[in-house]
Structure formats: C-alpha cells, structure tokens
Amino acid sequence: MSRVYQWITAGLAGLLLGLGLILSGMANPAKVVGFLDVAGPWDPSLGLVMGGGLVVGSIGFAMLKRQPKTLLGEPLNLPSSRKIDGRLIAGSVLFGIGWGITGICPGPGLVLLGAGVPEGVIYMASLLAGMSLYSVIEKLRSHR
Image 1 (cartoon, rainbow, N blue to C red):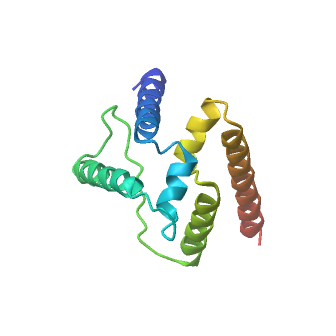
Image 2 (cartoon, rainbow, N blue to C red):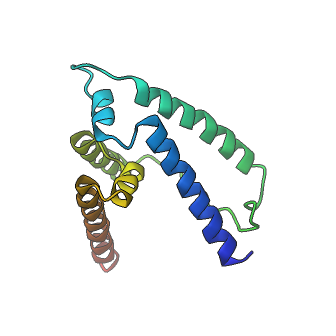
Image 3 (cartoon, rainbow, N blue to C red):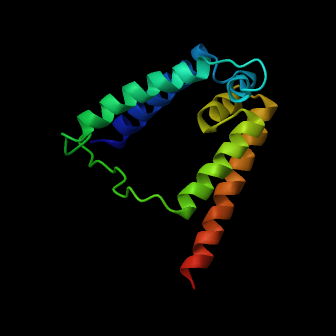
C-alpha cells in the first residue's frame, strides 16, 4: 500500500485522537491533576475517558488477533512479550511521576504543542530529551 495512504490514515487517527482529547477536556492539565488529586476536589471524569478507551481498545485488539494484516495491508507489529520486569516497572513509575507533576501525557502534550501553549512546548522538549537520553543509555548498554 502506498505511503501516502499510510500518512493519511495516521493523520486522520491523530486528528481523531486530538479532537477526542479536546472534547473530553483531557488536553487541560488541570483536569488531569483533578483526577490524580484524590485528597482534594477529586474529578472522576478522566476515569470515564480511560474506561471508554479501554473498552474501544480491547475490542480493537480482539479484532486484530484474527487478522494477519492491517486494513492497509501492512503486517501487524504487536508486542509479543508479556514479561513484567524491573525496566517496565521503573519506566511506568517515571511516566506516572511525570504525569502527576505536569498533568500532561504524550497525547495531550502534542495537542498543547500544536496549540502553541508554552507548557506543551516545554513538556514535548523534555519528552524528546528523555527519549534521547534513553537512546544513549541503550547504545552504551549494547556496547558492553
């Protein structure tokens, strides 16, 4: 399948995600912090958004298990490992700490970056710096 179709479908999927984040209010860091602050005025709406995403995602993954290729004819590249190790736990903890401090995760970070919100620019720059640091560490580990 043509790369043009891949770019179009990726763009449409990203647009759909961004619109969903904006409509649900999840691009607003204060909304996310309101969910994470269980000791303060707790806002459960993020839990409903997550639950809806879990249902839709579960249906999608169940459908993918019966298909050898994507709708565009590309091979599926799903994770095969189900191993929970120290690296996975450490990465999850770091992600959670960053999410709790900023109220931003990668999807809303891209929405805020696209809107030119300074916090989104800083968040995405920090995210890219962290990814670069990870790449450097992985290269050093592989040379040992």
